[in-house]
Length: 94
Image (cartoon, rainbow, N blue to C red; front, side):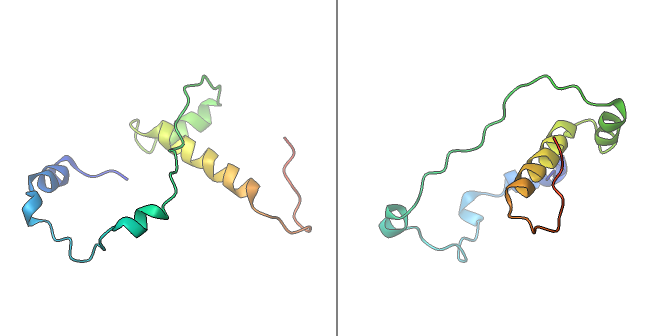
């Protein structure tokens, strides 16, 4: 998600004392006692060859962020592969 620099400046200008937290529940000791630590899925620098038409498509959405968009599509594919499939659906050959 991207926000405009004007909106970012407006958000950053809000003083902490003026932020309404009334709808955010307190996190007490019980909450943290049952919490699981989840390490972020970090990115790995790789060199990858892709067809020019694929690269052009992702860059058409803006040169900034095209790698993030490519990664989102790849991540979505991986998640879809992990879901149970019905037997009537043919799997993709690798």
